Image (cartoon, rainbow, N blue to C red):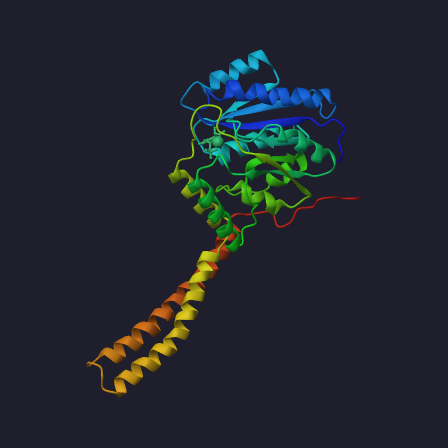
Length: 317
Ligand code: UDP
Ligand code: MG
């Protein structure tokens, strides 16, 4: 695996980033220059800008950057498909054209210097290196708290996640090949990549403010992304219906005792006791029934994703 001078592809998803790219791409090229001068990487390393159906001049800006330096390359999606999908498009484009790919946002919120550390870890044998924020000082209180609540909820739902890691990471071409076997349409890369396995490392960095332009992730997109993050990995919410049904059935016993005592003490009106008993009993039965159905639907859901069932990491033949 160990490549002496790996070809590195920096993959940048871009949606309406005409203002950020002229600042951020030269910074990324500088990092490539530094690593090239240190003999860490091949001079054929490059930056791939992936235009996600932008409505502004992003594609033109990418073309101009390419004209100025051929190490800047571009792909453009026919229309806006969202950060995760455009990132996948980029990674799949470079999969057989690099030794390792690094995904990084166009706005330089992720410190590009961490790339150097990532490449060093890659050269030492890590195949997936996560960029993890050391602090969230530049995030609002709300974004910080909601993000942490989201990570813990995901963990509790059984999704493997890396805390404070967004989509800033290095992947070897072998990791990219394994990623290509995940056929699911509903992509949540941060969950899928820990699922791949392979030797992983972590690099920490300070997250900065955007260099230009504004966030393309308003609260509504963030929320639907979080729901995706849980529902595309876990059938647990459905399983919880079953648990609630069982708990209710137990409570039902206590309720039944209380209702019967009230009934025999004559402290009830006609029909109350029978209604109470049946409402509780049927309620818990219905929930248990739904939970059983949920269990099967959950299985179907996992099956239709056609995820690879195993990943072979090495072979001696
Ligand atoms: N992005 C994209 N398609 C979208 C939304 C965003 O390619 O539909 C890109 C965007 O250009 C940026 C990255 O995804 O490079 C992260 O977006 P942003 O910085 O707006 O999100 P935030 O950092 O505020 O969460
Ligand atoms: Mg950003």
